[in-house]
Length: 389
Image (tube, rainbow, N blue to C red; front, top):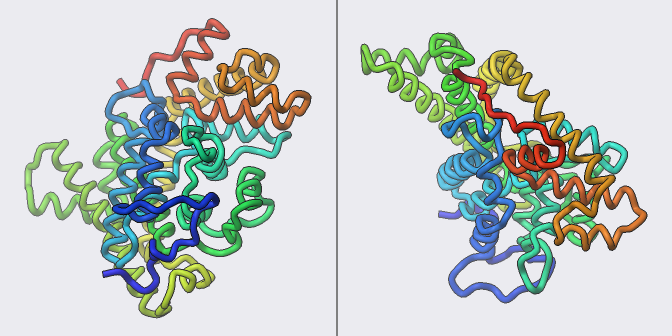
């Protein structure tokens, strides 16, 4: 049953370019489908979260992460009576703007783009779905509905000045009301992202042997999860034990968000999606006790995983790849692929516009393509060693 504060696809604010509606799919379903079929979405298969794509077949990529986020988001949306299709669309699109090499690649591009307006993966996702995907005869981008665009732009909360140039360009034609919170559906996508990465970073860190099961069993929330598994399954195999504990951890986070959201919604009593946007605070979030416990877990991950010596060394190496490629293509834009050179010709003499094209090209690269391109241009061998034995 649809809640009164859910976004209603029959009352969408529409698309930038009006289209004839589908006879069997809602506007939000079409948005989700266009995102899934986008080139940028397919490239997430070979973009990483923490580890570089070639380091192991079992580590999460941006694609598997996005699928996990969508699964969690659908579960929470269904429990709260929200529009599952809109929630899924935002969840699947939330990482489209990430460059190769995860946050390491983003940090490198932020520094390189500082003289030209900066780089932000969330703004880049908007640029992709409004400009860079060029497959349709009638428009650039995916021509998504207002609600999906809003969710991509604001799922982490209001966007405050200074507004990134890519977002500002979008809002010049579509006012996304950046100063307000997003819909409940977008807030669900954001919290599902937190749940998914907290869970799978623990799993990936174990697989990389950056910490042990005993280390996890000493952390808040996880201590209770391991204790329950040991009570129910004494002497359980090592791998099954940690899987059972981590899936219980996953469940604790999902159940906490649903319970806390129901409490917040009951107190607010919103009668429309706009009432959620105007609430002045996020409605879909963790309770304070769980949020405080997660801060301890995140601090553990920061020191034991994100700043592990092997990971730091890999960050240094891939940062060098991005730092080499950017000035090279700025100096040699004629070496860009044919479809990019037409854009370069149109901005001749404008260094800022050229930098943004080069940034679009590099940020769209997968990990392996960036490494291969770097090896082709500079003759340096691609990195083949992993961070685990």
